[in-house]
Image (tube, rainbow, N blue to C red; front, top):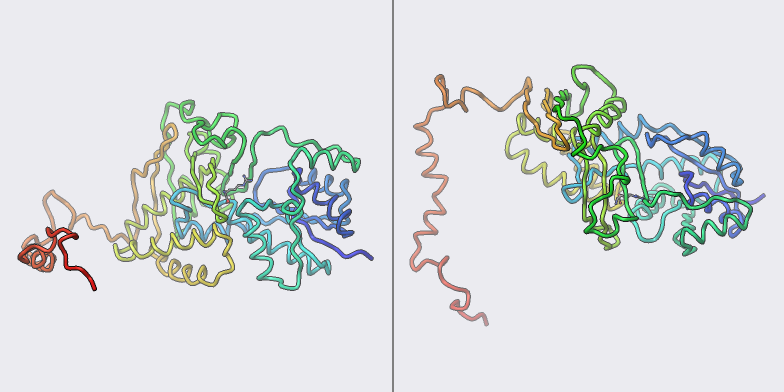
Length: 409
Ligand code: ARG
């Protein structure tokens, strides 16, 4: 009996040709796996296609809840934005897909796991690193990285094998799930081109968004959104509704010059309406309830967390160490945030919490202030102490030029 390979199957041209190739070149039986992570595609059609192309078995796995609870929730608490911009939808999904491929491979007694990534992107790293860490005994096959075919050549190869599956009409390479939609290629490859309207699916072009602003109220508990406009919802449902709602106001469009892990700079277009709203609101609520020292240090952890996840290092233990720190800040992150969506813009216009560090009595310029202004005088004496001493040195070291300084031996 031929050995088996378990292939992550999206239904697209690349992974479809992978089925044919793994059979022909490697003599493997191919088991295909498609995860439902809210990409909104016809999963039955994908399964039919896999079987038509010769998959000996197909798994459709509903992983929406797991994706939201184990991946997106951590990203929310970490305010995760790679290079300050990208909410990481594609990057978050890869380790989950890898884990499911490994699970199926073990159940099927397979010798190999296969994916359809090219050798130019981040996803190959995310898959390979995760699979090798979880299952060192499995071979990892990446046919698309190996074969060096263009998409036209792929279509030709499939046709020759009796499977007419032309390249998709879409000029763009798209990856989407419930956290967002990532778009590359086509006209976007010229970084000077404004993203054409036809590249957008989740966000209305801001200039055509409604004239009336839309207020949205998000409620958080322990750093996670639990209600939208006063109605409690599970995370999956809340994110999906917010995507539709904020996307209709043109909110969540991100145009990004991005540094891939392999060193290539790439122009990315992202549509992340819910992610943009949730992270903005979460970050704002944190400013109400965390100390300034917590905020400053958490930001370091957040940046490193997003970088690890982007870079394919989900399995790196530092990720969990950082999450432990982040989690211990989230207990007081409870309350409501009011957002105003208007023609592509997003503004936090109100926030409240049962655990605020904001005190009206301390802050007010009106009557009833509880802040003792006399205390400020002594505080300022000490606050500026060292700076004053340094400034007072003669001759002023600060004003001497480097050239004039003594030569080092
Ligand atoms: N640059 C992003 C990442 O590496 C998104 C990639 C999206 N992939 C795609 N085929 N459009 O996570």
